Image (cartoon, rainbow, N blue to C red; front, top):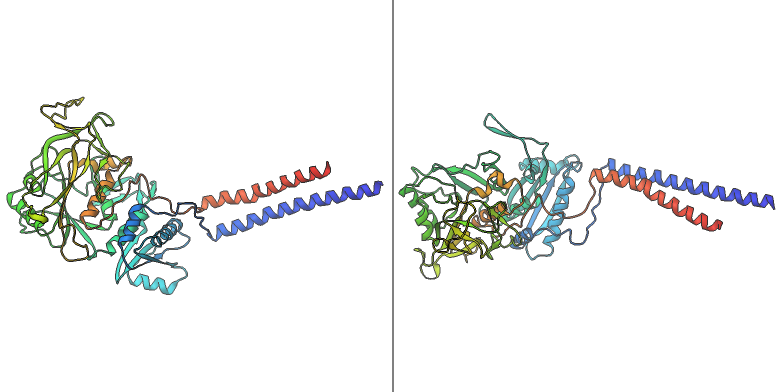
Amino acid sequence: MTKKANVKAAGRHALRASALLAVALGAVLSGLVVALAYRLNLSWEVPVAKVMQVSERTRDVLADTQGTVRISCFMDRRHAMFRPVSRLLRGLRHASRSVAGAEIAIEYVDPRWDLTRAAQLAALGVPENALLFERQRRRIIVTLDEMLTQRSPLRAQEDGRVHTDAGGLGVFRGEMVCSAAISRLSLPYERSVIYWLLGHGEVRFDDYDELRGFSDIAREIKRDGFEIKPLSLPGLSQIPEDCHLLVIAGARHALAAEEVNVLDAFLQRGGRMLYLAVPRVATGVEGLLEKWGIRLTPFVAASLRTLSGQETVVSSFADHVITRNLKNASVVFGYATCLEAVSDPAVSVGADRPKVTLLAQTDAEGWGELTPELFPRTFDARNELRGPVAVAAVSERGGNVAKDVAFKPTRLCVIGETDFVMNGTLASRANANRDLLMNAVAWLAGIDTGTAPSLGGDATLVTGFSRDEWVLFMVVSALAVPAGVFLLFCLVSLRVRR
């Protein structure tokens, strides 16, 4: 009887030892598998609920684009940004299958292995770590640098060049840049040129001052595929033919009558103009703006909706391409001119009259302040403008023409302030100021889609593992899972013993 009990005890010990050995071997095997996957940079993507959806702006772009768009991803698969880029591309393809528009075809080219195709892309001028967009023999190259934004870069100017600290916190804006590239492929011209007027005290697009500069918004405009050129009007008989958008930002001195006539002729032949006003500064352009249905008033927008008592928070937007996706968002103005729609524009002729839309307005409790330098601001019903008051407006003539024909409808956008997109205001990213201006630029250039508010980067498309997450997964797989199995074994053994 004792011998039989000893045999049973030995069997139990052998069973436990074999179980422990199995658990240990499982842990070692799990660790080896995950370590091998980590070393080879392997990954898989797990779609979760609605995470594969891109933004509404991107879906609108895909719906508005016809035909096949081929995207060649020319990247080393070991690159740290390969996963977010590949997730973005798969998200674009997934979205294209749910809308009646563009068909996205993706090609991955690793310069280490696909030598023949890599040589072909290099011959086309495509650098490594870039995307090539192709549609109907047209090509647009988007580099990885264009898809990354330094949130808090350290800048220094040396020899006229600006150097960015690569160690800053990066923000991936691949979806915004790629959707803009697809939009440009559908336009009848290859590149949009923006002329920035200078010579009348305007703000400069190459001013890198951290507070008062405009380099950040200029970088955003360039990242969307636009080329910015300075323009001086004296001596010109007309705006250059390659001008797709003329920007007048913060002019503080009056334009000569001849210069205003040049602007008038530009708009008459289908030009596009963005005017950022400076309150209570006469530039000589006011009459031209009224001619197209928008009047600048002497009042400055004020409201009880404010951050510190000096700013005006605007969250009431019209149903327009520029502002359609800004619902539940807010634009912060510090010192904005109040705008009015002219009931009878001078250029109105029958059905060809300009269509004026007041884009952004204060709430009903807002008003037009006549003495904005006095605080606290209070409404004077006898002398001031009763709200709601508008701070942004657009005028369009001939807007029913298809965008792929030669004729261009005239488009004009007026915003009552310039400083709302200076570097200091955009640094917090806690407002939709950038989105309002970028949407206006896109609409003026003929891209009739708007971007939703972005407070730090693109929406996640797919959930996946980064290299750090691989380490965590390895630890969990090699320790936690076997420990769970061992705990279950102990519980079963205890029950059997009882």
